[in-house]
Image (tube, rainbow, N blue to C red; front, side, top):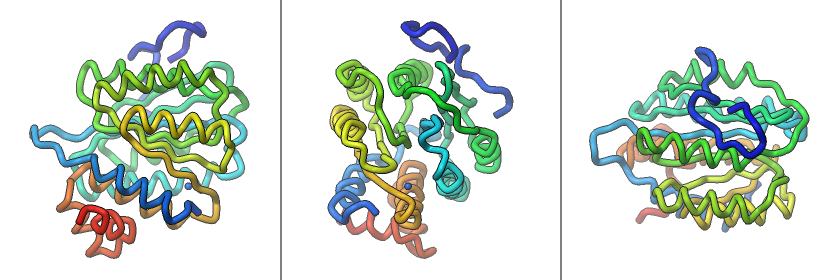
Length: 244
């Protein structure tokens, strides 16, 4: 998605070569929202846009974040029925997206090749890209992982509102508790009928389970969740409890 500051990204801009303890109430709120990602009924594969802030502030926990996210991809691979597109931004106006991919090993390889670089957030470009991509085929959800927000919040809210109208919920995982980012992420989640959930290095195992459960539900609905819970998925158990 390279280009001038004001130009909206196009698909041609985004293609790459074959390329986180939340409080109990916050986790429950996330799960309650995530359950709205019902199984598809049109026979088509689900599509999940997975966006990452790869600016320098995330370097200390980047490896852990990549590992957790890779495990989420593995869960989708075990279930099937979900295509994922990776989107990331870093440096000076660099914002890119992979092709849609259903191979968890390939997605892990792409993430392993991304390094953090200094720069400002480009969340607006991510939202623009997701909206553009949804024109060719429905996107069932956007997951975003980041720690900061350095853009005009009203502009982001306008873009988030567009996604909400398109029925694309945004699930925002915030590393740390920067108040500016938190306010923005909460509002984006509200406008898209998604969810916001904070995390830090001490919540790695909990976030892992939430990510796996969200991916399982997006890909295979209630049956996939039940299967995951039988295999010991704590996040799946929590999600099922919320659905009773």
